[in-house]
Length: 110
Image (cartoon, rainbow, N blue to C red):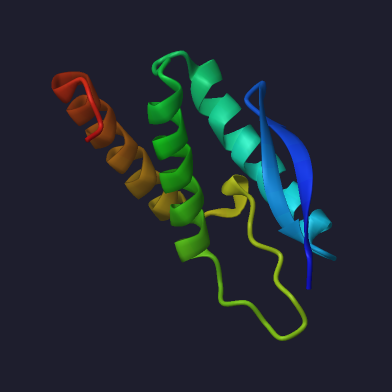
């Protein structure tokens, strides 16, 4: 199976990504989710650094994925953030607040 390259934009920046034949739709869907997650954090105005926005977006998406019900053989439609339980949203908000405090104090991620 050969890979093709797809040019995508995430938060206004271009990336060329390798994609297996037949995987374009799934890759573009993932790109849309990442772009939306990063833009939402950027637009909130608290964090400006692209690398920090990317880390927080990755954590948000991983948390949502962990909270999603297991995939069925027929496929899975992962819940939107609005479908996540209020308890899970509260835990995520607390985690993000803690991350924001640590990032502000430390000034760097690694």
